[in-house]
Amino acid sequence: MQKQTTLKTCASFEGKGLHTGAYVHLSINPAPADYGFRFRRVDIDGQPEIPALATRVSFTQRGTVLTGDNKETISTIEHLMSALRANGVDNCRIDLDGPEVPILDGSAKPFTDAIRAVGLETQDAERKYLVVTHKTVYEEKEKGLRIIALPEDYFAAEVNIAFDGTRCLANQWAQIESLADEYDQVYDCRTFVFLHEIAPLLNMGLIKGGDLDNAIVFVEGQLTNEQKEELAAKLGRKEVTIHPSGALNDRDLKYANEPARHKLLDLIGDLALVGLPIKGRILATRSGHGSNTAFARQLMKEFLN
Image (tube, rainbow, N blue to C red):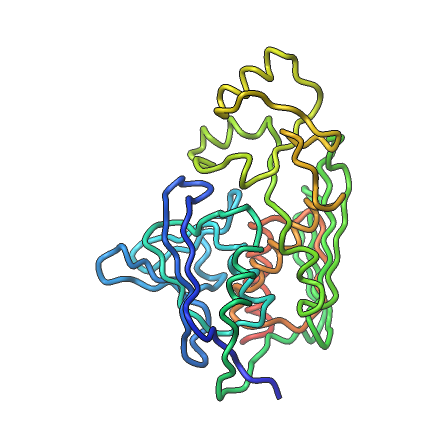
């Protein structure tokens, strides 16, 4: 019988949010058994808490956003949630003085490193699971999107991605068979975006805190010298270059399939919003935050009621 865990002590972070650009201080704090994961907005009167559950998801454009009872929000939670779940944390309170989890380097590595540094404390309560007892499927046929959960004695997952018509990311695949043993193969994989998506996302009020230090920017096709000079000026850099992988500014990929591994990292974080560790095998094709969290709600309805 496995016991629940929490952190031995507080782990703290600070940095800007990817989408809001707001500079935020965040701390992950120990919490009692059966508390789960809860975010607390310490900058708002009454310090409202938002349970980290898929039923609280309100927005999924380029990140996962939770909304509280009085419309307070916490955005871009997926990398932190991924690190908490993959590193065996069951209970913690996450305090923030702003609306968004800091993006840091665009991966889950800083969160994982801090969790491992402070260590876990075993609690006197049995760990509970969401157990997949039969096959269940989520589909968006028009997008070629499908997520399947199959029975398994532990958590395993694989992700297939495809960005049709791109030379950088035509088809990629990533798999994890054991969170305990293999999470280090995905935890440092960074978020990514295509260069042609940046202007539309900015027009939507997103990625205000995005830069080349917290995201991989893929460039489709060639840029003229004039375009490179214009882009460098916008980014506040002397010059920009394009790596053979298509990544801007010679940011060599950590793995040939780093984008697929990052999507797997995101999937783990979004599915943590079922509220319990999962025993099941997840197969995801062309998934994103919207489908991940919709599937999490489906799992909760089928296997927790």
